[in-house]
Image (cartoon, rainbow, N blue to C red; front, side, top):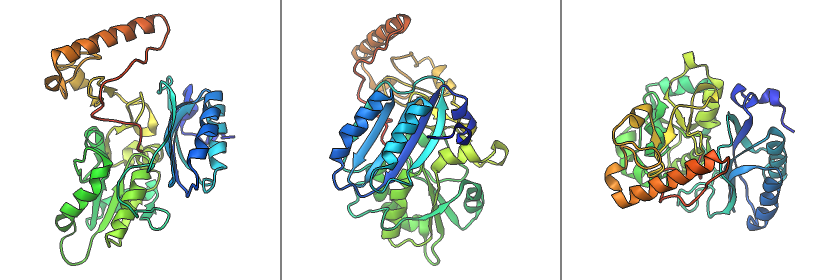
Length: 330
């Protein structure tokens, strides 16, 4: 069982424990792992999303501390998962509506056959050593996350690839390699993402592309925000997370962003103050992209949600096509 004293304050003091996890592991039959894992999550009242593939497991789940402990113990007993990487945080209320255990081709989709973090990967850098690395003028710092994530926070001086999905990263790197690396001695390349999994793939990819000095932030932004004091931090803004909290800040405290129902993009206080914002219906990012007919459907769904909330019930319904976040990456 986990020791609550080992959790960050945001997780220890919150009523809901959130665990973001991943492990690259060679599952011979990942489909056979799904039913027992789903049954345990249901029995423990756990909600969230877990992805299973031949290359391992990835996801974020939430529930009681004891329930999370039992699910993590089950996962750590799977082949190759004894060293499961978990980042804990807390939530004021359950950040997921349901539990999903899905079978996938990749636990984080890059679409590059042969990219195997179990075979080769970049050098891990602990959060307390990260500032020195990215402050080095000989280091190129790349944010491997999607554009909507970068928009609300990133590290000082980091390059934004402006990708809409992680699958676009290899093409972006190949197209910009000469501009990034130049001629002569290759610089160090430092990369980061939310919890570390995308950098497992991206550093393995760069190593395959012949780049030697490749580094990535161990535990990702979440571990950095948990570990590094705000006065020493080079992080600017908030960190997007793939659940109802939307964002977290230093100490993994819940942030100020909300999510637009129509386009699923994060909204700042300034966005919500815009005349183009209508709760549950539209925001400045998507107002021009939706018809009045669509907006009326969203209004009706929002009304039904409000009525269900007043009755103390959940109203899940069917959401719109999501242009932005899907809970498949850390």
